[in-house]
Image 1 (cartoon, one colour):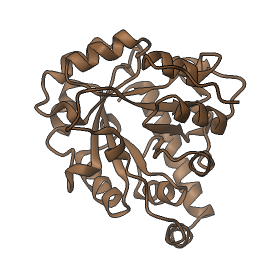
Image 2 (cartoon, one colour; image 1 turned 60 degrees about the vertical axis):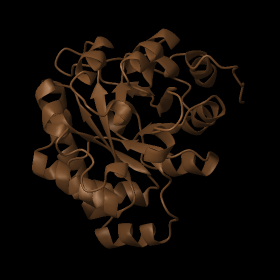
Image 3 (cartoon, helix red, strand yellow; image 1 turned 180 degrees about the vertical axis):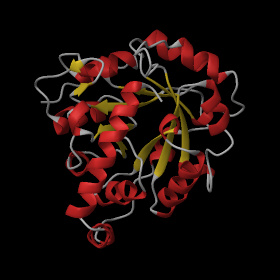
Image 4 (cartoon, helix red, strand yellow; image 1 turned 180 degrees about the horizontal axis):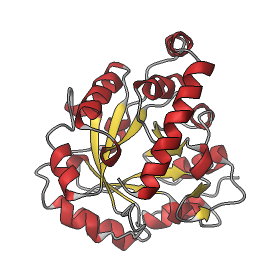
Length: 275
């Protein structure tokens, strides 16, 4: 792991310990029983029947370790509504508070305002966080291969499937990609996506070409998600040329005056202004 990721994971262990003490598992299970079924995150993004087009997971985040504060006028629900009106297929919601300015309750707030499925994007290191994510209304969770041993990835995928959530398994390094392709989709293929993070967590450099190179190693690119460094419609075209039809876009959109209009421009569609 990178030094940045090491530091975050160490902090996250303390946060999970505190969360377990504050909200016991029985309370999470009670909340889940009161919820409806999760929305189909996988189905909203993977379309093998129609001509290729880009399906965007639009991200809601206030800041990041590499960029600092990205957006001062941060209203997660308003931003999610702007995304939904301008072509997003799903929402990624940061819930890490210290480094990304997120909160777990943003998930329910967003789901109450729009009909798109929502991904909990955080540093998942414990089974408790999957229960916590579903209890908060999440339809999907992020797992980072660089932060987890293979046994935990498999275990977490099984639990996520039992809870009805999709897993986005993210990799950066080639060795982790080769490890992930053998376990992504376990136990059910229609519950897992494979993400390629274009940002090197060691150097914080972001290169779109990273997705293009790694895609050549994947037989089924229909479940591939390119993450980070996507800024233009041409970037999306380049991804499609390499068989990548799903993109997670965050920082570029969050820096624009109207994130929804910026998304429409990225997708080359007529923008809708949402107050």
